Every structure is written in C-alpha cells, then in structure tokens.
Length: 255
Ligand SMILES: [Zn+2]
Ligand SMILES: [Zn+2]
Image 1 (cartoon, rainbow, N blue to C red):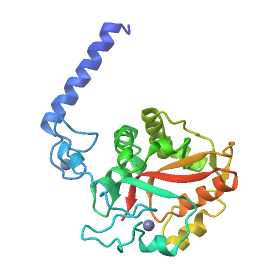
Image 2 (image 1 turned 30 degrees about the vertical axis):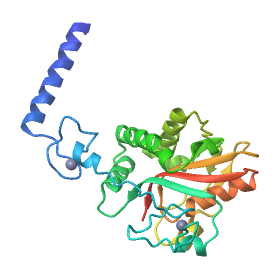
Image 3 (image 1 turned 180 degrees about the vertical axis):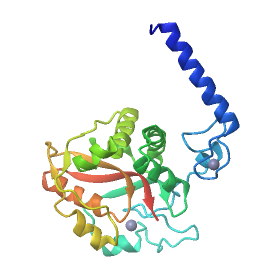
Image 4 (image 1 turned 90 degrees about the vertical axis):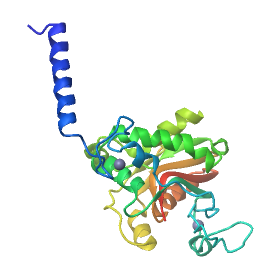
C-alpha cells in the first residue's frame, strides 16, 4: 500500500543513494570541471559563477558596446561606437549586464539555459539581471517591459521563453508591468547567423504588435544582444504602433 511514511522512506533512500553517488562521482563544474562545491549555482562552481564577465562602466551611449579599457571613446561628449555613428537604430538605448564572449562563462551559462533547457539556471541569471540592471540603465524611465517573443513552435519545443523569464524577474523586483503579449513572432526565423545586414533581412516582418502600446515608453527584454537586428525589428513595430520610445535590456551583449 502506498503509505505516506513508506513513500517518504523511499524518497529518503533515493536521496541517500544520490548523495553517495555524488561523493563517489562528484558532478563537475560545467566550466572548470572541478567538483561542484556547496556554494554552487546550478551547474557552475562558486568560483566560476563569481567570474561571470560583467559589462564595464564605459560603454557606447546608445548600443552599450564595451569600449576597450585603454579608452577609445573618440573623445566625444556622448561616446558612440563606430556602429552607432554609422547606423540609425530604432531603439534609444541598449544595455546589458554581462559580456557574451567566445569561451566565456556567461556565454556557457546562456547556451546551457537555451539548449540544455535549464530553467533553474535561467532563474539565477534572471535574478542577477534584475539586481544589476540599475547599474546600467534607469528603470524608472520606462512604463513597461516587453519580452522579445519566440515563435510558438520554438517556445513549445523549449518549454519556456527565456526573455519572458528575464522580464518577469526584472518586473517583480522593480515594480514594472510585463506586457507579455505585446509582441508576437508571426514568422519563424531560422537561427541567426551572419552580420547585421543578414540578420536584419532575417527578422524583417517577423514581429507584430498584439496589445495597445500607444503612448508608452517600453523596454524590450532579451537574453543576448548580438548585432541589434532583432531589437531594431521589435522597436520598429512598437514605434509604428505608437510607442513613445523603446529601450533594450539584455542579460548579455556580444562584444
Ligand atoms: Zn567552475
Ligand atoms: Zn554603439
């Protein structure tokens, strides 16, 4: 008979076996492959988690590109990177809290949430975004958060949209409404590769506005800012639907 105390004994036995197995064969850290310590965060040891690559203070005033430590801000009063001096974006400002670099820990963590479907890891990253965002961007300037949508098929396969989880954490912490269905992805786009032009062609006409956004200052939320093509496509449709202005907050940004 499935008694309550019987089932709790079974669970305890399973926990004990898992603990013994972990002692014999400790789970390695996803990055450094040392055994995970007690302060671990999901698949990351505390040392690797503490070494997540943060964005520096000195970034491009518009797109948030990190200037090299040795300067390179072109001496202008409002420092803009070369991309922003040559391109016109639909969003007013984009900021990220982490750097997305080849071989980097932040990149490894984000890829693990996406392709390993680690929702618990994504929740840790969401808390980090919510806590750190005010260092990079004034959240009081915005009326609501708009997560960049996934196509329904990709969302169904993954089980969640990482942008919604990130926006939820920022909204809860800073008292901002999340306009979860303000945007929808009306066209499935292949996974993005290539330069800005290729990505811009890829996401053109991919988004549609589903909610009333007129007169609002909206902050788009996503996991990674790569070339800005997705953010621009979203910002363009939101502005066309009457949004006053659009900003972008991402967990990480490609250097
Ligand atoms: Zn490690
Ligand atoms: Zn820039």
